[in-house]
Length: 209
Image (cartoon, rainbow, N blue to C red; front, side, top):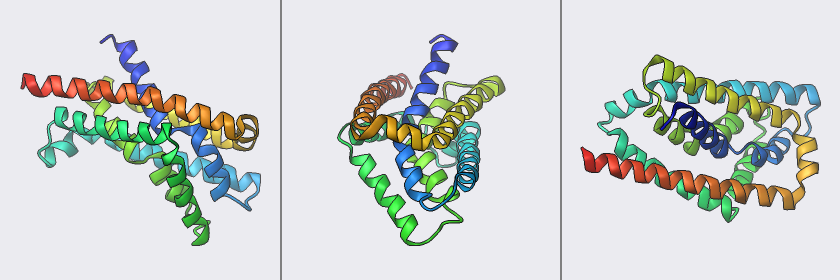
């Protein structure tokens, strides 16, 4: 696969699993009662923490798999199934319901000073889907140049996520319930197709081993 296509696929995969538009109303929910300056601080901290988590898995993902004796093709198949499950939840809006429950727990427990780390950075931004996608993609970006490219892709995705948080109020008003529903389902279908490709590539690699 040409390098540009790999970069584009990686960008789309990570961005869709993070799902910034879907996080916008949840960001507003967990920062309820905060002023704009406080929300900016929370969004910046959450984006930085999520970037560090995903960057670690982008650089050391293969090493982490080796420690547990897991081959990359096997993880690619398993990760593909996980991403497909997430895509299924997005299409049928199960994932949004679960995220809203997580945000409600954070509010009721008054973790107002720690919401940047939990639940925003983990697990809403750098959740199982985004981490799995990052580890899977790390196999296609070998060497220091490839790892740097993947880290920059993650940085770009989280920069967009940060921008969505800044514009959360306007985006939520603009999209409305119908717009969010349509966008989430569309992204879910795209993620499902990418997940099937991960599984197909993993099975092909396992057969060739």
